Image 1 (spheres, helix red, strand yellow):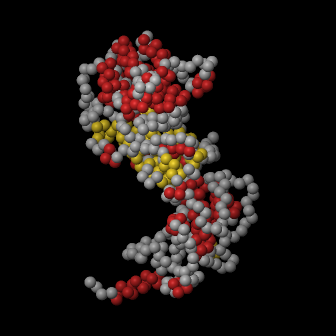
Image 2: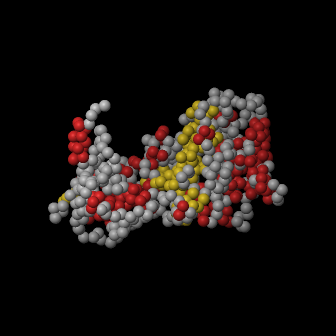
Length: 619
């Protein structure tokens, strides 16, 4: 049984999951006055008698059966393919003997013929029951065809038209409650009016934008009235919820989005939302050598405005450390919903990837502190091996392979810059072999070059540890190393086990590199010690070293006549600073987070500034 949150430090797993609200669908089966007064987002039907209600249902099916391929794909105009009706695959279920695979994948088969039979015999007691059959029909089609296929694109196009034809009561009014259009229209006339507004040229989507055709910044709607929640098709949506949205650029790959805002406009009927877009790997520009997890997405800074009818289905996106350790408990997640994993941000302008460090800063501010009940795994799950880009085999709108020679190198993919540096073994699980015999950590490096190598090793190890554990576990591990820098290998093994997904070998490398770089206090038998105070000299940051390396620079010793012009430390290393001292310079302390601190000026330099300041004439 998974440990409870009270028994272990897993509270961080509950943050940034979604809206923090249940995701179950409200099923309105009764037809009393109380249910009529509540708007659950099902199609609004004013008719009181079953005959008129079923006439509206038949009118909806008529429009769905009237969509030809050429209406959404002008390139097929005049071709036999263009005359094909998109709804043909939905008319009937395949024969069980001829296609048993269909019935293994689909647990609740249905068809347009079955739904038509129920309409003819007036078998639906409410509009919610009719809608549940229709939504199940489209859900079966998405499962059968699969994401990225032409059949999937056609089915979600029909679903988007269906959403347009079945507006809820709240969908027909604007922010001040005014219903636009003729107030006395019958239900059938409302369906016809909605069909006249739907645009087949953009796959019935509310906008023309999608990955590869990003909306301009001025497309954001300003004069709006915010909503705390919005009901749609029996589901109540909140800020923070994850959804598939209609993608008019490539309907076979819906937009992965997180809701950041729900609102109504003052003079336009409908319910709208703003969503942060997450791109699939094939919708980005990347090099041929970059690999991705299955179902991986990357966060972008693109925000799209959508009508609520653009929602295709509920999904879930989990940050990689959370993905490996837990899942939302029922009813906060429907297990049949598509599941994605994210670990990076993507700049759509520069086409660069950056690893996400603090996940909660990337979700809506309203839900950052909200906790979602989670089912925590006993052990972290093993992530599947990353796969090459599918752009090697096909073209996808918005995606492109970039020549690695002409591409700005990803700062996360560090090469081996230092020959002779300590080789790191980074196993994903605790090794089964016994721990090595106890040895003292190395003495602090004496030369600038050795310290630079030690810091590079430390930086790599620290980044790997930070990727594997939670922020709370990392902070605790940092504190343990600072207070016990001479911990034995067995003690380091206990620290690694307490931190989580960290091997003792990795932690030993981290501690030894930190001591060698002068970042941890350590007293050795030879009397050499390193101090946790700010070093008198500042090592070049790994970013600076990497930049010069990419430009073909070489590291050589300064000429003796040049060295005499600068202050030097006791070992003869030239002291240099990234910036002159400024008033109120704050003392900083080195931490084990894989970063290089700002340099602190030496005391002789500060004394020199004080002496010369008294001699300067005042102006």
